[in-house]
Length: 290
Ligand code: FAD
Image (tube, rainbow, N blue to C red; front, side, top):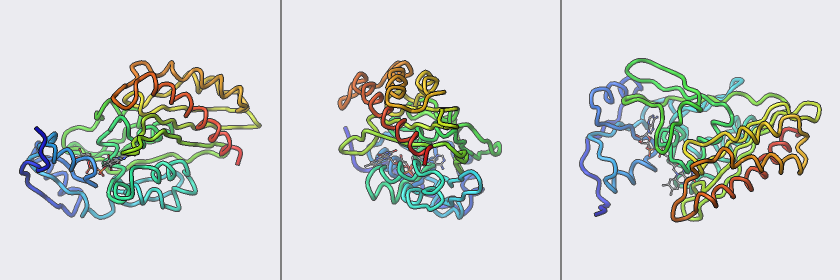
């Protein structure tokens, strides 16, 4: 039976990363708390029963966003701060647009990029875009710091490469080279705004021809899938309607095991992925030419 009252837990509010890591190491049943937008509902439904919560909100510097060549997003950067950051909007506009479309204002005000990627909901927005952009995730734990490619970090439904006691500290996104455009397009669930299906496309264009491309589909499989054949079909193309349609036809190849639920079947999600891929690729070509 569902209850709206969490089971009892201890609460810690450390003021440094080291203190947070020590608290997590001392108690294997403890969990970090960031914006609480995913964890608090789990506590209320008693789907998560941590012995203690280690609140990351008082740790200074963990919410910083900085651009110095690449973009570094502190784990506690909220979706709203990503959406409104001048650095993100000018250098990585597709990422700012993604954050602006995520959830509702409360979710964007409280929810964080570190919480979102650690939770790894198969319908979440960031994992798809971060994989397409070739981002890396930095995590710190009892054994020190390590940096993982987004491709290795996301492992499945609510599954990441994080180990017990490890905290995501930041996400780094490489700079987009000249002539490169990126776009993210999603079909959002009308109630939650989570991605029913979503596509991130990144294309690099030189002398009118595509030299490199990445087409990554989220919401359909977990983790998000690179549509390699579609990306390969784009290389050498000029981004014409016909060429994009030919690439889009290759998208389903990457989506074996498409997820279905009461809202959308796997077949419908696969159909959506094709439609969204067409839009995302066209938008990425436009941006690359701008
Ligand atoms: P929390 O809920 O605090 O934590 C989530 C999990 O991550 C917990 O297991 C926690 O222990 C762990 N964690 C948190 N921070 C760290 C860290 N630094 N290192 C290691 N582990 C950590 N998401 C989308 O992508 N798209 C949407 O459209 C969308 N719509 C939403 C609509 C609603 C109504 C709600 C409630 C949520 C929605 N979300 C959506 C999810 C939202 O993005 C959450 O913010 C996110 O999933 C969790 O982030 P958080 O900061 O709130 O983390």
